[in-house]
Length: 145
Length: 213
Ligand code: SF4
Image (tube, rainbow over all chains, first blue to last red; front, side, top):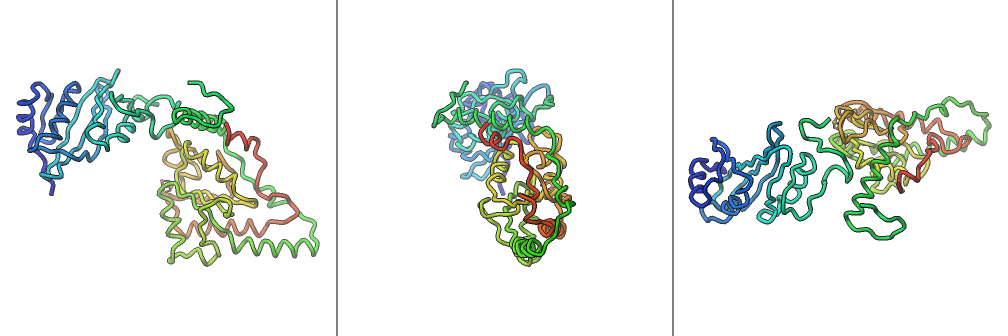
């Protein structure tokens, strides 16, 4: 079975190469800062002992105070997985896009943009996916009615 | 972005905008359900041997070859598939041939949740079916929007966009219920006569607009 990466170990490794990236660690996930997300993602994918080459899924949650984008990653090589999160503010939610690293993020980022209104900077084609063009609002936001 | 009219090709962005506008136009136009067409069933006919015999032959033919157009839009489609397969066996009624083209179908089974984005396409398919045509709304979603009636994207009942002949409630309805719905469709077919024109199909005010808008 796929093992979960121990968060403390990972945070230790991350802080060596990218200081100040980690915002919070719990048993089951790591929260990083949005401005260092891209660096962290590159590190996770490219360092040989982590080698997260597969993005299982990308989703987001609206917590009213902030919004959170969640990345679930797996390494095919080491057979381990990780839940990575990034928090952004609700008024101008902006997170760098990871489509350059994991191609599969393309449509999922569009979905998150469509339903929650988080804009992914650097996304090649950030348009609505499920709702039609011209639809007002982002329906999965908690205050949408 | 304003999209110029009278052009033959559009960029992808422009096509999206046109699509969005037409979906919204359809939604704005469909604020009330299209009334069920039942008054023709009660109409009295002046019977004469020639007409009744011809009616009998035609209705017999239509009754035993009601080819369905399966629009499996959500979970209800599974029950529709079960109805078609050997245990419940729609083939008994001569309707096992699910047509993939509306041109060859007589009965549209709307099985599942219809969203506004899909409504335009479904309406187009309905318009492409040849008369006489029948619509069966299968499941709570198709009947009234069901669980999702107040959702941001779901059509509250397919009768907003097309006239419905038989409603089969349930979430999902069991295959037996769907078969009972077919029996009701067959009853309606039996009641048809060449004396009324285009039975059961109302003249919709702005058919064309739905497509082009
Ligand atoms: S009526 Fe129930 S089973 Fe049928 S499409 Fe709706 S939710 Fe699914």
